[in-house]
Length: 119
Image 1: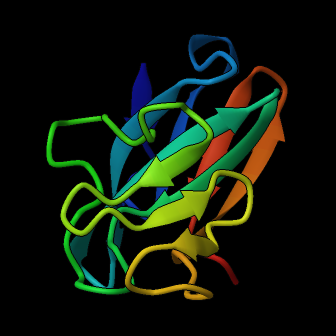
Image 2: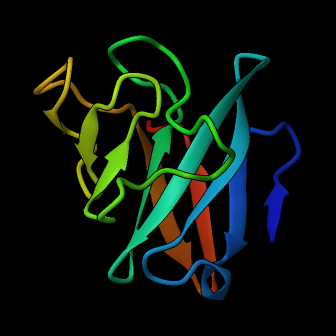
């Protein structure tokens, strides 16, 4: 489903492979260091974030690729229960209200979704 470009600073996948309400994990490199990220499809719009809670610095998904709250309305930090809006990454409940997940740049080119570090 996924592929990296040369140095690992760009990740891409087939847009059709990530339907609405689905997530996918991936890894980018930044300055030679691996950084875990994830992307969510919210009603056909793709949003990508660094997989790190702004409160504790832990990955959001204790079980791989399990990012949603029980009702599916929010992204959930499995460590401390923080809830984040899926389309903005802003914490709306939990230990870090108002904090934000680190955003990654998402572009759609033809049938591919491309994720990279923001400029």
